[in-house]
Length: 277
Image (cartoon, rainbow, N blue to C red; front, side, top):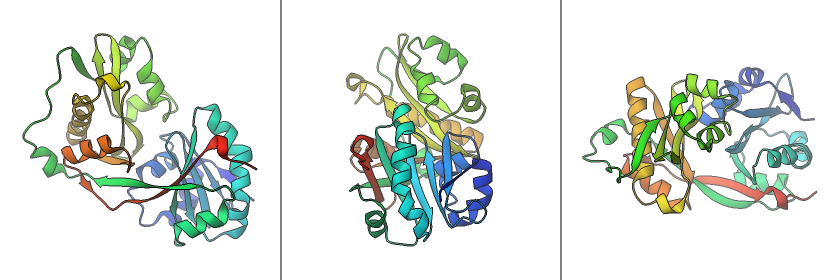
């Protein structure tokens, strides 16, 4: 069977499965109830395996082995997760594994549908390297960098900031209480956002977007991210940066801001529309 747990209950029951993953901000953001997500387990009292859905970010398979859980997981995803995910605008199933079993073999065993294999690129924050940077880009004329607060949201007639926040947070109030964010305006149009998409304690996972290609390549994303990091420094927080290997701009910005690139690790993905019974 597959059982859904309330995140707070999941935090208590599956914490032992996450030993060594204390910096998994996205997972803990769900378990601590800060961010949107769901927790499923093989046993509601003594789980050996868990499947976590961090909405609009990632799916995680944790622990095991639990063959009864594994054999039901794909059908559960197709029948229950897929319709809900599509309903909130998720196009892709993106899966990371935190297990003792080799990931490729486990994915092949669990899924009849063939998942593609990609690579995630993690970085570690290097405060001193960031502070040692000699210069950050100067904003081009006409652009304005603002902290995300109620005033910025009221100015945003198209509600881009609100829409971005509510992909990951249950309410705007929850984000304003625990999150960090910056946005870029040109006149009264929001050009980009950089915000904490997942938060665990004082750990902040960065999500950054410049919405139109015509505004890219001008240092806007770097400026937003630098402001985000400065805010983390002021409040004693730690920024986290993870991206995909094909996102060359994101990798370049992280390096530019003093983050240290760590070894890549696998991620498995398939468009939900291609998930067949």
